[in-house]
Amino acid sequence: MKEIKEIFAEHQSLKLHEIIDHDRFGYYAIVHHSSGIEGSTLTENETRLLLEEGTTPKGKPLEHSLMVKDHYDALLFVIAAAEKKRSVDVSFIQQINAKVMRHTGSVHHTVFGEIDASKGSFRKGNVSAGGSYFIGYEKVEAYTRELAERVNQELPGSETVQKKLVLAFTAHFDLVSIHPFYDGNGRSSRLLMNYIQAFYGLPLARVYQEDKADYFTALTDSRKQETVEPFVEFMFAQYKKFLLSEIQQYKQDMSRELKPGQTKKKGRGLSLFF
Image (cartoon, rainbow, N blue to C red; front, top):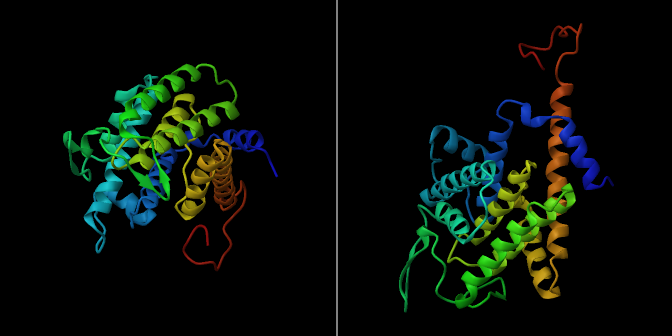
């Protein structure tokens, strides 16, 4: 099987970023899969129509459309921040979450007062998910600050594609494992990963909705084994899947084009292609 370095080189040789609307449709796919992991029922076509035309799908909860729209806005936010080479700090991570939860965040009543989840506020209570208990709320801000500082320290020193991706995947794992917010932790963590990839000019990774169970298993295995390796291995497999699917799709589409000097066969209907 090809290694990530070879697959990445082949993908880059196609110069897909120069193709009109390639990045935009890639963003739609990221939003579709990431929102789907969190419960959105919108199909990929419904996601595209919502983001392009504002068409809300019939028979689907409004909350799912709001989730998708907010995720897309948050993705554009991190991409713009990466283009400006903005440093990562606690405020930036909170801003990501605030955009993710803008229209769906709830107000939580705690002994410390009301905590508005749509504002990127840190949780003020202890939480568990999927059998995992996350760090106490009193440690959240310190751990998040430590994560931000490590990312900023390592960003300039990661020279190879492999190291850049490991940094992005590890930051993803660390933030979702801190679980600093009441909601939107998974989406915020995947967006932090995308920020690092955009910072380096790399294709943006996605976690496929159909691989949700394996995604959660990789997170759980890394926590149980106290090493990020199972999760990083899973994410490399997801990244390879993404790159290979783009390469295959490009080759299939290009093979349908008429070659120089080739004429359309008669009797095949009105379509140029069929």
